[in-house]
Length: 202
Image 1: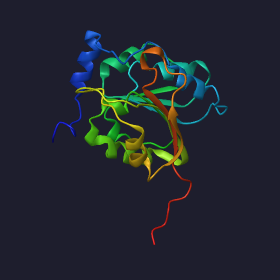
Image 2: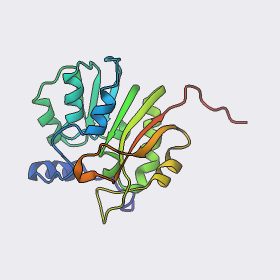
Image 3: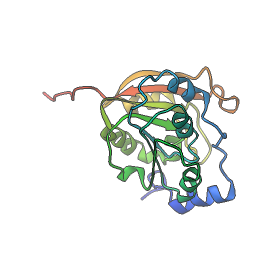
Image 4: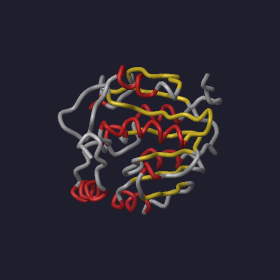
Protein backbone atom coordinates (compact mmCIF):
# COMPACT_ATOMS: atom_id res chain seq x y z
CA UNK A 1 0.00 0.00 0.00
CA UNK A 2 1.52 3.33 -1.08
CA UNK A 3 1.73 6.31 1.25
CA UNK A 4 -1.14 8.13 -0.47
CA UNK A 5 -3.40 5.14 0.24
CA UNK A 6 -2.10 4.19 3.68
CA UNK A 7 -4.38 4.42 6.70
CA UNK A 8 -2.61 6.05 9.64
CA UNK A 9 -2.54 3.78 12.66
CA UNK A 10 -4.31 3.97 15.99
CA UNK A 11 -0.89 4.22 17.64
CA UNK A 12 -0.03 7.31 15.60
CA UNK A 13 -3.15 9.16 16.72
CA UNK A 14 -2.94 7.97 20.33
CA UNK A 15 0.61 9.34 20.49
CA UNK A 16 -0.48 12.69 19.07
CA UNK A 17 -3.10 13.05 21.81
CA UNK A 18 -0.73 11.88 24.53
CA UNK A 19 1.92 14.42 23.50
CA UNK A 20 -0.58 17.20 22.94
CA UNK A 21 0.39 17.43 19.26
CA UNK A 22 -3.11 18.37 18.17
CA UNK A 23 -2.70 21.52 16.09
CA UNK A 24 -6.07 20.93 14.41
CA UNK A 25 -7.86 21.12 17.76
CA UNK A 26 -9.19 24.62 18.45
CA UNK A 27 -10.82 23.73 21.77
CA UNK A 28 -14.47 24.26 20.84
CA UNK A 29 -17.06 23.57 18.15
CA UNK A 30 -16.22 25.88 15.28
CA UNK A 31 -18.55 28.64 14.09
CA UNK A 32 -19.59 27.22 10.69
CA UNK A 33 -20.82 24.01 12.29
CA UNK A 34 -22.51 25.68 15.26
CA UNK A 35 -24.38 28.00 12.90
CA UNK A 36 -25.61 25.03 10.88
CA UNK A 37 -26.55 23.00 13.98
CA UNK A 38 -28.51 25.98 15.33
CA UNK A 39 -30.89 25.72 12.37
CA UNK A 40 -31.79 22.08 13.07
CA UNK A 41 -35.20 21.63 14.68
CA UNK A 42 -35.37 17.83 14.88
CA UNK A 43 -33.46 16.81 18.02
CA UNK A 44 -33.90 13.12 17.16
CA UNK A 45 -31.86 13.08 13.97
CA UNK A 46 -29.43 10.18 13.86
CA UNK A 47 -26.08 11.96 13.68
CA UNK A 48 -22.60 10.55 13.08
CA UNK A 49 -19.34 12.40 13.68
CA UNK A 50 -16.37 10.41 12.31
CA UNK A 51 -12.85 11.19 13.47
CA UNK A 52 -14.43 13.05 16.37
CA UNK A 53 -11.24 13.69 18.37
CA UNK A 54 -12.10 15.61 21.52
CA UNK A 55 -15.71 15.80 20.36
CA UNK A 56 -16.56 19.48 20.78
CA UNK A 57 -19.28 19.24 18.14
CA UNK A 58 -20.82 16.24 19.92
CA UNK A 59 -20.64 18.10 23.22
CA UNK A 60 -22.44 21.11 21.71
CA UNK A 61 -25.18 18.94 20.20
CA UNK A 62 -25.64 17.04 23.46
CA UNK A 63 -25.93 20.30 25.41
CA UNK A 64 -28.75 21.38 23.08
CA UNK A 65 -30.76 18.21 23.61
CA UNK A 66 -29.91 16.12 20.54
CA UNK A 67 -30.58 12.53 21.52
CA UNK A 68 -28.92 10.28 18.92
CA UNK A 69 -25.28 11.25 18.40
CA UNK A 70 -22.71 8.62 17.46
CA UNK A 71 -19.02 9.47 17.40
CA UNK A 72 -16.25 7.27 16.07
CA UNK A 73 -12.50 7.61 16.32
CA UNK A 74 -9.64 5.20 15.86
CA UNK A 75 -7.88 6.70 18.89
CA UNK A 76 -8.67 5.15 22.26
CA UNK A 77 -6.96 8.12 23.91
CA UNK A 78 -9.31 10.65 22.33
CA UNK A 79 -12.46 8.69 23.13
CA UNK A 80 -11.51 8.15 26.77
CA UNK A 81 -11.30 11.91 27.25
CA UNK A 82 -14.74 12.29 25.72
CA UNK A 83 -16.15 9.38 27.72
CA UNK A 84 -15.18 11.14 30.94
CA UNK A 85 -17.60 13.97 30.12
CA UNK A 86 -20.52 11.50 30.33
CA UNK A 87 -22.60 13.36 27.76
CA UNK A 88 -26.28 12.40 27.40
CA UNK A 89 -27.43 11.13 24.01
CA UNK A 90 -23.93 10.11 22.98
CA UNK A 91 -22.68 6.74 21.72
CA UNK A 92 -18.90 6.30 21.48
CA UNK A 93 -17.34 3.86 19.01
CA UNK A 94 -13.62 3.16 18.98
CA UNK A 95 -12.56 1.70 15.66
CA UNK A 96 -11.99 2.12 11.95
CA UNK A 97 -14.56 4.36 10.26
CA UNK A 98 -14.36 2.28 7.08
CA UNK A 99 -15.61 -0.77 8.98
CA UNK A 100 -18.46 1.05 10.75
CA UNK A 101 -22.06 -0.06 10.20
CA UNK A 102 -25.09 2.15 10.61
CA UNK A 103 -27.72 4.35 9.01
CA UNK A 104 -27.73 8.11 9.62
CA UNK A 105 -29.71 11.23 8.79
CA UNK A 106 -26.73 13.54 9.14
CA UNK A 107 -22.96 13.03 9.06
CA UNK A 108 -20.67 15.83 10.22
CA UNK A 109 -17.29 16.43 8.58
CA UNK A 110 -14.76 18.34 10.67
CA UNK A 111 -11.03 17.71 10.03
CA UNK A 112 -11.60 14.00 9.30
CA UNK A 113 -11.38 14.14 5.51
CA UNK A 114 -8.10 16.09 5.65
CA UNK A 115 -6.58 13.53 8.03
CA UNK A 116 -7.02 10.73 5.49
CA UNK A 117 -4.43 9.98 2.84
CA UNK A 118 -5.65 11.35 -0.54
CA UNK A 119 -5.77 7.85 -2.01
CA UNK A 120 -8.59 7.01 0.40
CA UNK A 121 -10.91 9.76 -0.75
CA UNK A 122 -12.99 7.66 -3.11
CA UNK A 123 -13.36 5.05 -0.38
CA UNK A 124 -14.45 7.86 1.97
CA UNK A 125 -17.17 8.92 -0.49
CA UNK A 126 -18.42 5.37 -0.94
CA UNK A 127 -18.56 4.79 2.82
CA UNK A 128 -20.38 8.05 3.49
CA UNK A 129 -22.93 7.13 0.83
CA UNK A 130 -23.45 3.70 2.40
CA UNK A 131 -23.92 5.15 5.90
CA UNK A 132 -26.44 7.83 4.95
CA UNK A 133 -30.15 7.22 4.67
CA UNK A 134 -31.81 8.26 1.41
CA UNK A 135 -32.20 12.02 1.63
CA UNK A 136 -29.53 12.18 4.35
CA UNK A 137 -26.87 14.88 4.37
CA UNK A 138 -23.11 15.07 4.80
CA UNK A 139 -22.18 18.57 5.98
CA UNK A 140 -19.11 20.33 7.23
CA UNK A 141 -15.95 22.14 6.24
CA UNK A 142 -13.13 21.20 3.87
CA UNK A 143 -9.81 22.92 3.33
CA UNK A 144 -9.58 24.96 0.13
CA UNK A 145 -5.79 25.00 0.10
CA UNK A 146 -2.81 22.67 -0.11
CA UNK A 147 -0.36 21.62 2.62
CA UNK A 148 3.20 20.39 2.52
CA UNK A 149 3.28 16.74 3.52
CA UNK A 150 0.41 15.70 5.75
CA UNK A 151 -1.74 15.16 7.58
CA UNK A 152 -3.51 17.49 7.10
CA UNK A 153 -3.97 16.96 3.36
CA UNK A 154 -5.53 19.78 1.39
CA UNK A 155 -7.75 20.04 -1.65
CA UNK A 156 -9.72 22.40 -3.86
CA UNK A 157 -13.27 23.23 -4.90
CA UNK A 158 -12.87 21.64 -8.33
CA UNK A 159 -11.44 18.45 -6.85
CA UNK A 160 -14.31 18.12 -4.39
CA UNK A 161 -17.00 18.69 -7.02
CA UNK A 162 -15.57 15.91 -9.18
CA UNK A 163 -15.15 13.68 -6.15
CA UNK A 164 -18.64 14.02 -4.66
CA UNK A 165 -20.72 14.05 -7.86
CA UNK A 166 -21.85 11.41 -8.49
CA UNK A 167 -23.12 9.80 -6.27
CA UNK A 168 -24.15 12.84 -4.20
CA UNK A 169 -26.02 16.03 -5.03
CA UNK A 170 -24.27 19.21 -3.90
CA UNK A 171 -26.67 21.56 -2.13
CA UNK A 172 -24.00 24.03 -1.04
CA UNK A 173 -20.23 24.39 -1.45
CA UNK A 174 -18.92 27.86 -0.91
CA UNK A 175 -16.18 29.77 0.91
CA UNK A 176 -16.82 30.03 4.64
CA UNK A 177 -17.67 33.58 5.68
CA UNK A 178 -17.51 32.63 9.37
CA UNK A 179 -14.31 30.55 9.65
CA UNK A 180 -12.29 30.87 12.81
CA UNK A 181 -9.41 33.34 12.38
CA UNK A 182 -6.59 30.80 11.79
CA UNK A 183 -8.59 29.22 8.93
CA UNK A 184 -9.94 32.42 7.36
CA UNK A 185 -10.08 32.28 3.54
CA UNK A 186 -8.99 28.62 3.50
CA UNK A 187 -12.24 26.71 4.11
CA UNK A 188 -15.29 25.68 2.14
CA UNK A 189 -18.61 24.98 3.84
CA UNK A 190 -20.56 22.23 2.13
CA UNK A 191 -23.86 20.38 2.25
CA UNK A 192 -24.23 17.33 0.05
CA UNK A 193 -27.22 15.04 -0.07
CA UNK A 194 -27.81 11.39 -0.85
CA UNK A 195 -30.62 11.25 -3.44
CA UNK A 196 -33.98 9.92 -2.31
CA UNK A 197 -34.03 7.51 -5.23
CA UNK A 198 -31.23 5.55 -6.83
CA UNK A 199 -30.60 6.54 -10.43
CA UNK A 200 -31.49 3.64 -12.67
CA UNK A 201 -28.96 2.63 -15.31
CA UNK A 202 -30.15 2.40 -18.93
